[in-house]
Image (tube, rainbow, N blue to C red):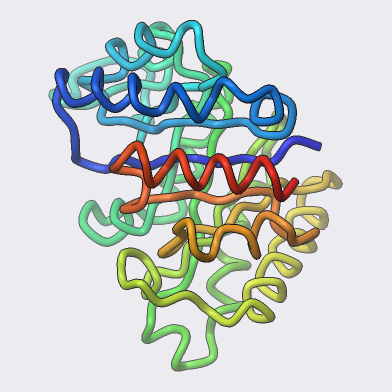
Length: 247
């Protein structure tokens, strides 16, 4: 089974910079092993998605949005619907990233609607779940994960789940590998209870070229969601290179 390597550029990039980025990244994608072993996805700011789609049309890269709205259209100035993302060629969309939960107040009811909208538009949602440092210190991680995953009870199509503990994002700190395996197993078990399906589970949170091999070799982890280390093409390319060799 192919494993996933997903870049989340967050609020970064310029049109010229993206062109240079893809030109540099291309050399890491010409290896047939990458094409055969990995699904590479870049989730970019919405204003650059069309540019990114055009630049990658000859490459083995899929393009994803970083969020979508809970409605298909209407008086929602500044928002982007799942249908719009699909219309410009996106295949995936991030939903429920901890930064969206924290800064935009997105709760489970909002995120459930977003998952449904994404799937109705033919997109594959990448649902981000994970505990805060306070929740971890209170030994509430499993309870938090179960609550966050519960929104998938009506899932009909494919969904990816990214375990991203909030306290590990951008900090350079990752959980112990045994902890990651435990969390991924818990997510898989809960997802199967809800849907009767097997889950595709990714790990995110300070993923880089130095630690990606462990994640990609694990039977419990189906790929990685990369933030800061995906902003430079050489860094992300190295992660892709290692991931292809590991799988």
